[in-house]
View 1 (cartoon, rainbow, N blue to C red):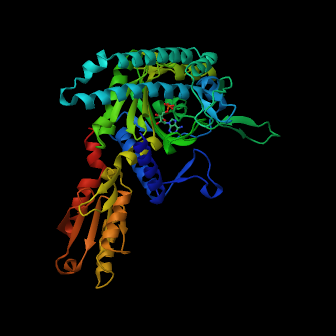
View 2: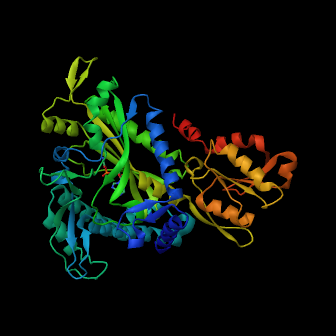
Amino acid sequence: MAQQDDVFKKIVSHAKEYGFVFQSSEIYDGLSAVYDYGQNGVELKNNIKRYWWEAMTLLHENIVGIDSAIFMHPTIWKASGHVDAFNDPLIDNRDSKKRYRADVLIEEEIAKIDDKIEKEVAKARKRFGDSFDEALFRETNPRVAEHRATRDALHERFSRAMNENNLEELRQIIIDREIVCPISGTRNWTDVRQFNLMFKTEMGSTADGAMTVYLRPETAQGIFVNYLNVQKTGRMRLPFGIAQIGKAFRNEIVARQFIFRMREFEQMEMQFFVRPGEELKWFNQWKEWRLNWHKALGLGDDKYRYHDHEKLAHYANAATDIEFQMPFGFKEVEGIHSRTNFDLSQHEKYSGKNIKYFDPELNESYVPYVIETSIGVDRMFLSVLCSSYEEQKLDGGDTRVVLHLPAALAPVKCAVMPLVKKDGLPDKAREIVNDLKFDFATRYDEKDSIGKRYRRQDSIGTPFCITVDHQTLEDDTVTLRERDSMEQTRVPVSKLHELIHSKVSLNSLLRKLS
Ligand code: GAP
């Protein structure tokens, strides 16, 4: 774990050093859980968004996009349940004066018991070698059984307390398990209180009677309140989907792990409107499609898993997370929810407007059911960054840091480098840049030795480096260096476009999905 923490720290500092992610307001000592994307970060982020947007709107003829405003009528958040129920249970430690999420403290306690089980298994694996039957050991070992019983009992008690919104019981679990504050090391806890996560602000001058508005905590509500506008103006028939990418804001209490949990972040959400009764079929379909979208990136199929929710929100009849193996464990990157007709029915009730869909095939009107896919851009960015980062030992004792980014997502696709800064090589290199730049993000680099320049491009994940040397002037060929294998091949300049395109285009990624 300590080793993984180290890797994560390195990834965070690499992200800063190479212009991917900066702490917001850094020269003023930063703003907690708010980040800015730098020159390479914004390109990677835009490519992730393009991959999602095109997978949704180009590959599905029944999905269209919108871009709704961040500010919305405050009653929307009353209707959606966010004003009354979008809360985190908080607890303070009186000695350190630090505030924690009570549910997170308990989840971490459960994770510690899981770790104990895994340690027993790892020890036994080492002891028994090839003859080790892991399944049998997990089933029959008394220490594993004891830990599992403790874990299951704790998990059940915790789930019940959360479901019943029983704040006293959450505190009691923390006391009973003797959970201490990581800072003060004491158990001097306050009561647990609910804390609403929405940011509020005022719209209009006070003289006119200012209205309290919220910064949206999810983009989904902008889709719900526009669904009939889109359906009517686009003459859409069920099933159909509306996709949206945009900022969301949550006043997170426990904001940690870099861009994993932020106060200002971006979501890519799609609401798929279906006939009542067909929602579970579509839920399963979207589970599969979304996992395929992730896997097509080639980050490693074993890095994903589903986490089906046992505890369902009152309006959902199925929910799952797609989790990704981050350096700090498997974590949610995307949620897929069958939200029934809850949101639309609530908006119908609170707005007093009829927002039923008329189904021409059934000749009846009803409120559609909704399957939602909701993914955080920043978490997706983090998963791509973490799984791409490698400190690679090279023959000869050197080390290089390389980002094995999926080529279609890389901020820069190719860098063109004259071997030396004379003899007309820079002019030839510029000529190549001026041709490639219309189709690919292309950089020109002539500073430092060629080896250093390769390393610089490896560090930001550039799939190809093109080197112009004296032979180029004679036969119009260059060396094309591939990032991961570091192999260099001599290719005609006229072939560059085709070669690069075949590897870096988003099309080839999208084709894997259809
Ligand atoms: N409309 C449904 C919804 O918002 P959610 O599970 O609360 O569901 C969906 O959020 C996704 O948004 C998460 O899977 C995660 O990727 C991202 N997300 C949520 N809170 C976040 C935060 N504080 N920082 C970064 N990403 C976040």
